[in-house]
Length: 146
Image 1: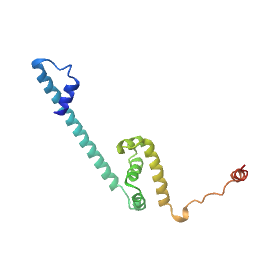
Image 2: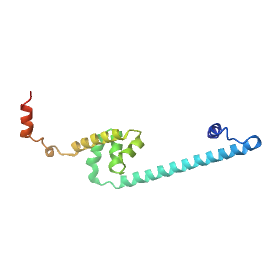
Image 3: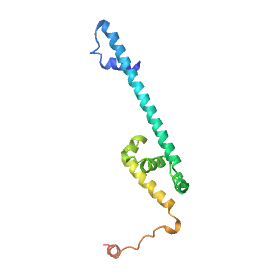
Image 4: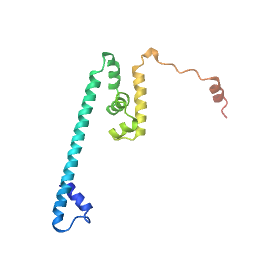
């Protein structure tokens, strides 16, 4: 009903005069109802597809994923969603940003930080790469400071 009034208000100069106004308003109401039905159906179909995709990805997990699952649980819920959507679902940062209501740059930064944290959590303590010694050029540059 509200949508019918909104359209009528926006198109008030085009509303037919006299007895033709009522059928015109019924046509607007019919179109608004049809559009709302389409929106509901699309939403339901998308929800169903997402549920099936989530179920498939959950059942496809192997027992070897326990370390990754444990590492993911160390991330914030938003970072978990970002990493999962980027890696498992194959979405682009702009798509993830749109879904989560963030900017694409924020998604990229959070994804980078989350990946670094996951790398740290998944790397055994003895396998961590040591920082290499500074090169002679760097050492020379830093020793000749004015």
